[in-house]
Image 1 (cartoon, rainbow, N blue to C red):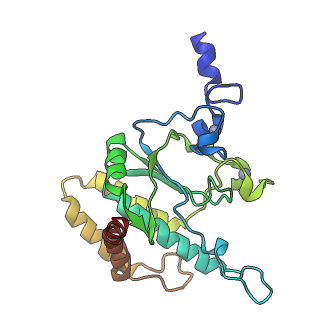
Image 2: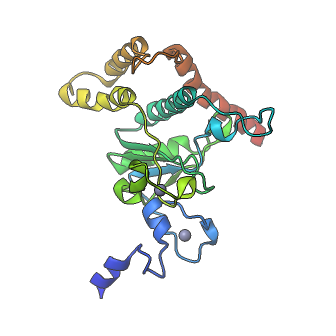
Image 3: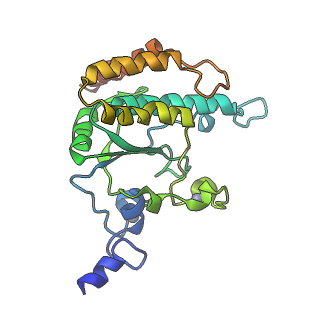
Length: 249
Ligand SMILES: [Zn+2]
Ligand SMILES: [Zn+2]
């Protein structure tokens, strides 16, 4: 009996638990869902719903009344700046295993950011640290997510460019980042394993210098924000928090 229950838990056959919430951490029915959304009280994974604001979805209308097309390169730069912002902020709380951003269009998935830490204590610290803060002028929502296996949650057809459900697919369409950025960000953990004796702060300073020289990651050209500009933007997270708190009381 117990085995039978385990095999249907979180699947379509499970009449009690919502399979979408269980696998993807988001369900289009939200709190009105007829099945249970079992919110974990602790998890290595955090969900920041709707955090990424895709400029292509908010483009101003052109002369024909349709949203103006957004340059693909600029759009990817905008996304990668966002990705780097989130990574740097989250890295303060512990080692990041996965940072995934959804390109889906449905309300419950658009711009969702999933971040899985190597250990759940780091996730708990991040949840505490980011609760009540603002990003780009909007309050940050943040919760523990039941998602721990992204292979189960991700749309395989999308990765093969054959998903016919487009932006309204119920599985995650994860927006890719360039290999250069991935190496820049996640590469630090490999370095750390080789030089555990060096202090963390020394390492961080070294990293910043390296990245400052290496802005043009893929050799495709295009000016990215300088390190100083980026640091100012991250500092603004806290200023916005202070401003938001004043406005709220
Ligand atoms: Zn549901
Ligand atoms: Zn899909």
